[in-house]
Length: 381
Image (cartoon, rainbow, N blue to C red; front, side, top):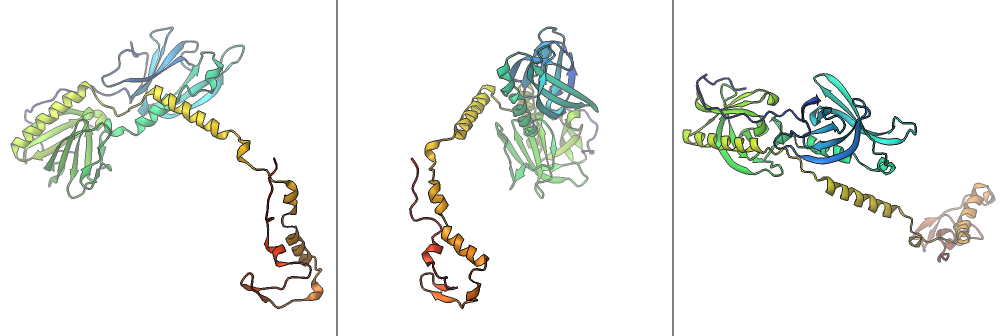
């Protein structure tokens, strides 16, 4: 944490809209399903869904966004809930019996969420009455988007000492563009400072040490509360205040010369403002394409599982019974002691095989014992 900044007046950058949507569980927020934040996009709609634990009997719909799951009632407009992906602890699908005399089996989505040390259990049930939906993956988009969310945290969250740099080069994220690479940047988080480099992109600001690239920080613009240039005991420094969701750190960096510091500050202010207007949360998903891929995979699997008679040949069972009969008889005679009177016999060299072997007993030929399978197999038509 940076501690060496003198408390003098500086230039403050306007705040980016605080991100809470993926980190909280909320109930009955007015016009929840209409007031999405900037950068939030609805990736899929799932209709005829009931919140079976909280609003039994109310038909609603699920909205799968790139930050959370939203359910809202179509009967009572004020009933809704928002479940951020960061709060989901467990999720799966179940077959449940609807509350009716017919006891119709329906598919349901179970979600366990944990927020502020409170456990929430949700059960979203398909109430369409369509039996065909019971065997369809109607909740597949929830699992797909949640999977993508877990793997795109660098777009949204501050990361310290991550595997983000390889051989002095930043590992670029999808849709990320590098605008500047500034060397000779001092991180003033300790008394002696650490020399490193800045990488400025359209999504984040990255600093890593020259001596040890695993000593680094990846800071998305989403987690920057303010940017300013202030005086420190090391001279003018770039000071970055992170949001509470980003740890509430105060970070200081010295860039020489002063002109380069001002250029970097202006560039960061501009990118910070642009990103605040239209954030990129890193999740790219198309529900229609995903359904087509799933249908194609299921069709291919069904075709592969079909039994094709013309690809197999059936052997004549009479030939199968003849396989190995002489060899079996030869071995059986030895096991039953029928040749004990002959005693042990010295091995003889066999020209056909090229090694020494026990002499073959009377009534057998080498070919009888060597040919395990008949020389010609007939197939049945």
